[in-house]
Amino acid sequence: MSNITVCARFRPSNTQEKQNNDSGCIRCIDTESFIFKDEKDEEFVFSFDRVFYEKSEQADVYQFLALPIVRDVVDALNGTVITYGQTGAGKTYSMEGLGILECDEQKKGLLPRVVEGIFDSLNFEDKIYSIKLSMVEIYMEKVRDLFDLSKDNIQIKESKSRGIILPGVTEITVLDPAETLQSLSRGIANRAVGETQMNVASSRSHCIYIFTIQQEFSSDKRMRSGKLILVDLAGSEKVEKTGAEGRVLEEAKTINKSLSALGNVINSLTCGLQGKASHIPYRDSKLTRILQDALGGNARTALLCCCSPSALNAPESLSTLRFGVRAKHIKASPRVNYSEEKCDNSFSVSSPSGDTSFGASSPSGDTSFSASSPSGDESSATILNKLREKLNAEDVKLLEEVFIQEGILFEPPSVEEESDIEELILRTISSLQAAVEELTVTVNEVRTIKMC
Image (cartoon, rainbow, N blue to C red; front, side, top):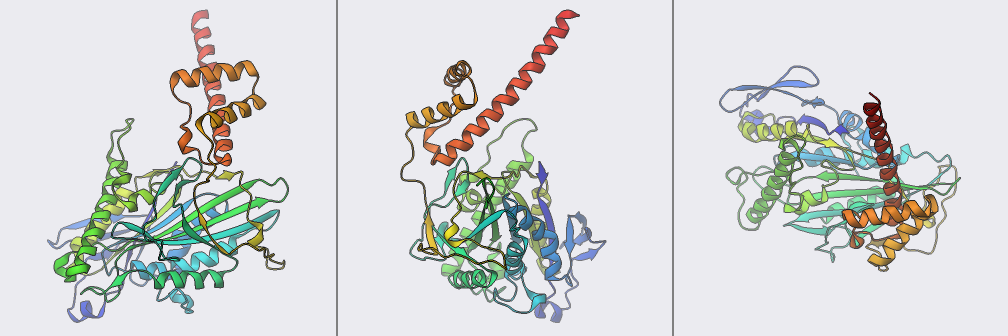
């Protein structure tokens, strides 16, 4: 298990703060620690994995925070990068830069660098890749497809093998960085933004970018996949500072409510009684539900806490930093994702020196649950038959009886595809092997005691 990587970033002072001779609220110690002074002049020392001060470069943030996760995702792990903080604290600039198609290398944000990093990290030796892109926003507690605005209330589902999924969301197969950035630019143009007193282009929604990288090994046709999620959260707001009214005020209430739900999940994950399972309120908001895998699940996660250096915003910055401190204690369990699904080679990414083949299928499509999900009896029979191929009949019969008696047989409605069944079989066998080994150790210990 590993902890979430948490970094803090302070934007440069803006024109108004400079005109007001704002004294600031931070004092640098080193690249990992700083002293923070609140509105009462009380000082706190904060330490994170890395601190990016006002003169930090966009490239530095990417290389430390996101690049290791990009490489893991190409190696078939799941990864998530989240920007969090007060409105106007530099979250969207950190994520996108001045613009997703910005050509200034120095000002490029995490997103365009991640796109380049994905394609640069592909290893074409004995592998075929397929890269798919989806883009949604959570606006007023509804998940909207930014590639197809007619899909304005996408439901969130959970799959045993794939984790949290968005059935019906548009997936665009991309072949190179330029095409990917153009697609992202179209999606960003559909995002909800508005003007407040703190930000002329304030994000009014949480924006989520999803990259799915499938790879097929040429030698044995094994399939692996990694999912990279980038999350540009809308900023927390105080109405007296933003001057929000009408629709913008309602948006602010919804944003703050979902961020509060995120804080509750963080608290539940880090403040529960040791050794005891506690309820984690993932379902309290669409945001926490989508981030379920990223928060204590099957994903390597990085959090960038974006803050204002201004003393005027010290209360909000202090809240953001404390959120980061709590998040640092979350444990994650990322693992390689194997799949029995076939890679879509009609739009596969080939090496720079090779040819890319194009099939007759559409470059964009929908992902949804299989329409031919097996019934409970059929699923049970399939699993037992597969077990018989690997174990003797007597052992399988005994296991079947134990499963039924103990009520640990899988739930048929949550198994959606043949690949899910295959994975469940492999997990079941692994669990059984571990149980047998543990039982053997216990038996040997009992025998030793009796001999004594």
